[in-house]
Length: 258
View 1 (cartoon, rainbow, N blue to C red):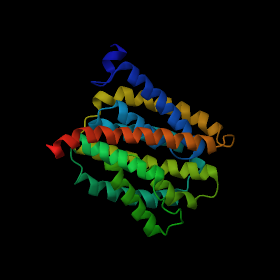
View 2 (cartoon, rainbow, N blue to C red; view 1 turned 120 degrees about the horizontal axis):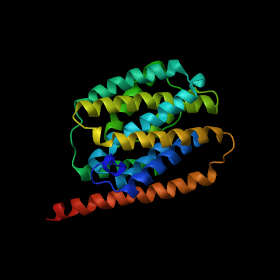
View 3 (tube, helix red, strand yellow; view 1 turned 180 degrees about the vertical axis):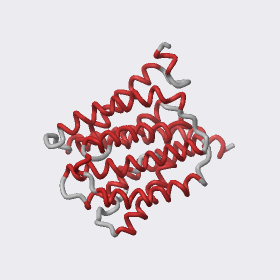
View 4 (cartoon, rainbow, N blue to C red; view 1 turned 120 degrees about the vertical axis):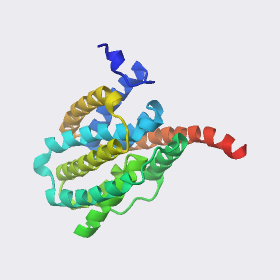
């Protein structure tokens, strides 16, 4: 079977190649800087992937990326924190499964674009050490919202980063919690009827690219200054999020004015 025949419907070969390269780069970014890759991947995928498939496909790719990073750093994971977080995540996923429906495409564009702009420019939740009960609540809340806006990694980071003692434990614990959250997301979207079959070859290829990016990123973990990268990241993500809002407005405004 030709590789072209394995591509999802309505996805151009060059777009698929760009997605594979982006998956590797964003995994490298998260492994090196600790955060941000999932948001960047989401906003680039939103320009190329049909909006109806955006959040479930992004979630499965992130599952592979985070699981690989968690395996590579497993000796540094704070398992007690991860267990409490994921108990709450399971509750949040269960509630979301009752509410997730096929939203209008422009609503998804507005939600993703608006959420990304808020994550980049809005007030950040204070990083803090949480009690076991609050950790459970954080897992439930962020998992619930991830079903609708995709990349809640920065929120999860704010809840869990201060529990870790060094950069390696921070990266490892974050990877473990996000692995569980994306796994639950995949289960929920499967239950509500999303078919991953057409997307699996591309998802597997993006995950393999992410594995390479993670390996390179972990080896750069103590060598890279994040100052210049964070500035470029904010500019690029902002422009792409604004494009999503513009696309949604092109659909919604004629309806409102008509």
